[in-house]
Image 1 (cartoon, one colour):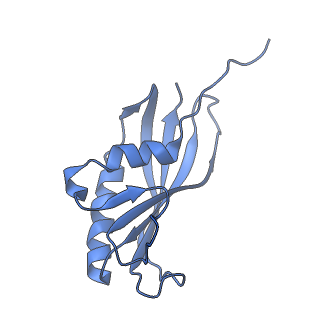
Image 2: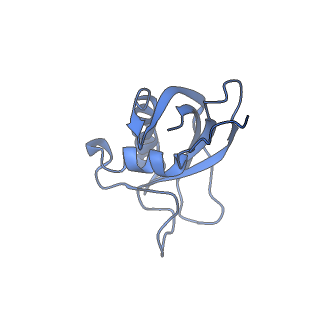
Length: 135
């Protein structure tokens, strides 16, 4: 007998969709990739799944999600990173397209990480593990 087909959600899009319209991030780009002309000085939260495994419970996914947070100054980037951090921790219990975020664990809080691709960039990076029950 074969295992039932499991539809895993696009975790990057889940995070983008759940953060981008929050009033706390008004005026901040939230997406999976920077827009054309991005130089690292804009207020932005870039979302990337960095790994994670389908482990322990065959009905739970454990993605690791990085947030790269940018701002026009180190202070501004730090402020946006703290807001994004808080909003990520509020994802516990949220439903998205039939999937449910069962738990949220901060693996590495916001840390200053210069972006050598963009000379004027001010960047903080954090890693959060989501536990997601697929649809």
